[in-house]
Image (cartoon, rainbow, N blue to C red):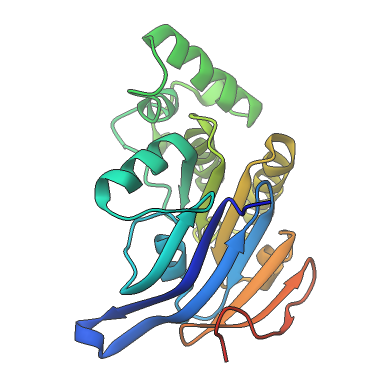
Length: 236
């Protein structure tokens, strides 16, 4: 089966080539699988995540969605709007809006009718244990609750891929475990592909597959459990 999304010999340079953030990386994410990209700060893992969802463009190489190359701001905007949900470390909620309104915003232009958007937002938040918080603004919520609002927002348009950049990084250990349990449960229930970037191996091991990066290269990969050394996509 054609992968949902893949990088093919992708390289990303900055500062006129003096900084190589990603060096000849090839990797594929299959439909419905969960993948953690792990590595220390500066390893290139967040750059890879940005390349996978078109928030950054490769210096060379190709990004494909369902086997078709995607390039250019317009093409990527359409792919993200239709198929990708985002969860960020710092939640990125609009502080002046309620939890329900933050989820509704993601549906503008995608789900017709204010009543329908409102019903879906409430259903998503309730499913994440936030039924009593739907009309609260982010500052009234705990960190774990804010991240659950962000997850509800990511699911609002029934994406085929959720990307999460250090989704537990701003949380205490108990809340981090709860958020990972929620993300993995939802991924399994909806068969949505999930890609998480993290420096936390315990977080990574909740995913079905782990890819380890160092200095812009993939240096290890493996199924659930510790990663093992491997040569993947030009890594060395």
